[in-house]
Length: 189
Image (tube, rainbow, N blue to C red; front, side, top):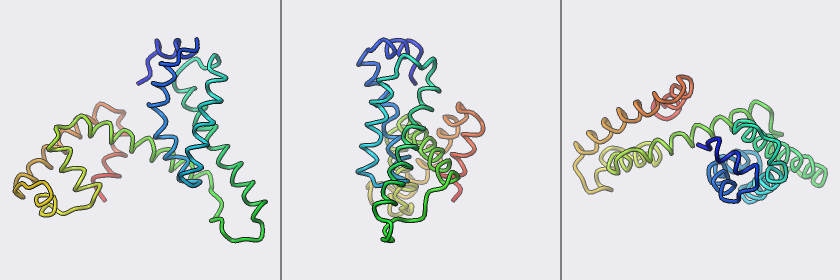
């Protein structure tokens, strides 16, 4: 998290505080933008948003305002790029359907949820983390996970149960709505 001391340092122009903020939010913002524009363009858009943030750094009184500014700047840049592309390619059908606000909200929530899941996974013991990653993110069966990790299928099942219990505890530390959303999205497909 970006604590109040870092916020004050950032407002004063401390580059270390800025780098910490960048590393905290960069992946989320790129994921959000990549749902609207190409991944290559998404990186440029996010970079520009951070430049704008740096130029206006004194105007943010809390972390949520700062994060909101970044998401809004990225969203607007994606929309502006989309409008520009539509004008340039008016007679070509290379653009997909225009992105609507509901899709934007979905991508924003998805980016935040995925980041929370990855943070939680880092808190798991290595064996549990590997089993969860291969099972839920790679889609492997218990037997395939056992073969990949060179362990018994019972070890995989035990690690999976242990990991899910630990994740429930970790997610219970979050707000109830976020914990429920994460659980539904990742563990009850």
